[in-house]
Length: 257
Length: 285
Image (cartoon, rainbow over all chains, first blue to last red; front, side, top):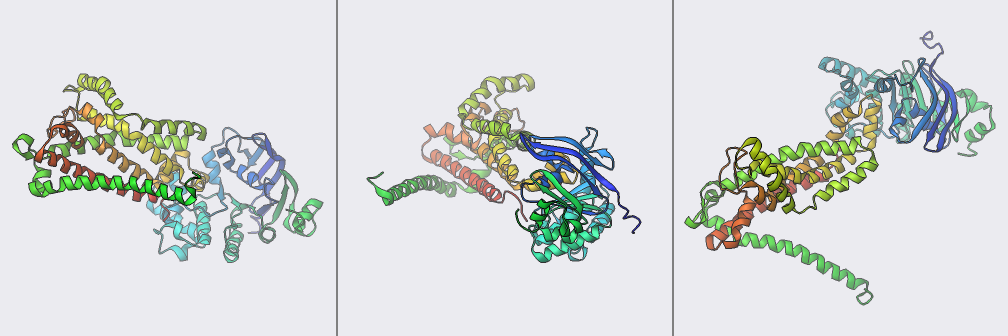
């Protein structure tokens, strides 16, 4: 296991600028995301951390008036290259949203949604991956008897883990999490955090969080953003114990933000 | 306004509102008072199921008109619903918001065109085309279905768009983030979530189609016949009332009111189903 944990980059962001119309939301960002590690993006509201997250699977494409320059290399390939198949990209780089957003379908149909989108028809294959996904998100034991119940009736933390299961079913390499616990209570939050530690064995995770304790608890690396700039990016331990930049220290110690 | 004071305005408004509601109520009561006795006198079964409509001979079977109304309505749905729903999906999902905000009100404006104009276009343009292409008199069930299909489209489009737009963006984002294309998202998710609103739009369209009178009189030819082909001339329930009321007396007049009762009940049922469906626009279960 230690062998597979050898550090290498999976995502390489190079001189990324992003504009909403005239407004520049990201200013010449360069950073690399390490394979099978958890990287946290922190910073005050409006600092661009969510925007950065959404530019890693091109969800920003949905917003009109967004302009991007620079490169985001995924396994060495620029995802903004015109040859990039955007549906393939989003299967490789999956996303968990701030508010759990299971579809208004049954639990089963939620989990196999991405597979059906990808054209998988065989019932046995769907069943098999569905069970594996729910097990991976620690939901199988609770949900196995009500697979055909509506997903929106589940408690919020199960909804969020269902969204993670739904993502795992399409076998992503990278999981982007946009404040995944902000709608959850502390107990549910700790369940999701434990799950993240487990998932780290197989996936690279990038998480945006407002919660500094969360960043220090779950992540291996932390990047601090402030008004569109990457201020500091280092080992989480270093950021929280011996930050190299004054601004980082001020933010972490709660002097602003 | 000063003269009346706050309380006075409130009272005045409530009087106005109640008189509007009671006017509607009175119309319903009036139709039933005039029509119901006939139903029992003549026999509901004979009235609804006999195809013998000869008022001068005391025969009042409205089955041909029921059949005509049904087929014209069904034809209008087959034409108007798919086109209307497709248009709604296109406008709600595939067109920039700014464009939709121009086109949607424009389509809703179509509902404001007087139905006599639709009928006029049907007579002048549509009927000759049908006559030339398929034969028959031109003024026919098919012409009625096409004109009504066009007339119900604003209803179908407008309500379907509203229910599609009521589907939370987070569902769409979730689907796209799983690698779905826009079209996959629409047909696997958005339309399913908006299903009850779309169904409601179709049912309201059905209500409009059954209730429409002027355009139908102008384009369907108005022969009292059970239709055997879409190219035949037919007379709907509404057309029958409108055409004969001016000279009807006695039993004949009562029979027309009873026809009104039948229409009234059908449309009340359709609209009630629609409003229940609209209330749960997005299935959050």
